Length: 385
Image (cartoon, rainbow, N blue to C red):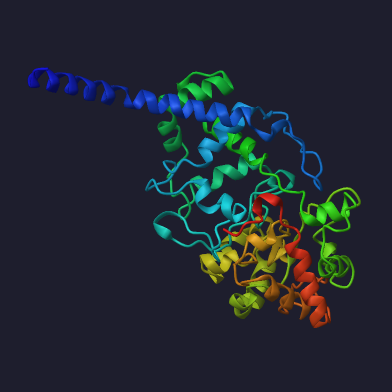
């Protein structure tokens, strides 16, 4: 063939390939979402050890909505510098945490608190460590416009990206039966929440031992640790186990003493000021504490109730071996240190919860308790990150 003809054919092929590139990407994206949708765990039921999920009436689950939510959860375009997605802090390989003491957002800016897992978040009654939101849908709104996390000025920036993306336009139309220009942030967070409700983890060695009667599922040490957990260790007081399910959280709030050395010095005068002008509790906190120190006030920043100072929501203990470091500030590195902290009765302060007191565990009991905690790891998280 003449070289000029060859060059012309080649140029035509390159041109066609270039023109089809975006369309091929869109088709592949839709195929991936469809595949995810039809392999969704929607109909599989809750794993061993977990109760049935309650689904909000205004956000019914569907395989396609779940798949769309997964896509949104991993999209880094929904951040000020195009580097941060929900999955940046909630990494599947680390049981949907990030392995850092405190979360990092855009430009690697550190926040004040540890990243909580979203595994089994479907069973929470409040969200964030201070419980400031009451649903997965409302929770999903906050990180997107947080200065440290995603760093967007408003939710409309996300809608602009989505409406400008042909693939998203088709997917939202398929899920919500709306045109692209009708997509709102409400549709976005409903999709993300639907995906998060599928992130369930049970069927651990503990579950097989306790609920399925498999007496070989736990080592002798872990079985002893279970007894310590439920009795002498007083752990099940907050990390609940019932006869037919175990969420390992009571969804309540406690002051454990963690982080109080950072606010103790000003606390007495702060509380005194609150009693004189209780209505302006947020303004009063700004007078006494900087942003990081205000974070240590925990649930109080939501309720303004003095007895809530330093309280944080009870975390689930499922997959706890995979979610280090621990506590709301990530200040405890490993499970051995966690057990030591509780064993000595926490760090004393005037708001310390009565459930925190010295346990007087023996060295063997500490070992057994840690072995039990390791037995709360579900099969999909048994491999180290």
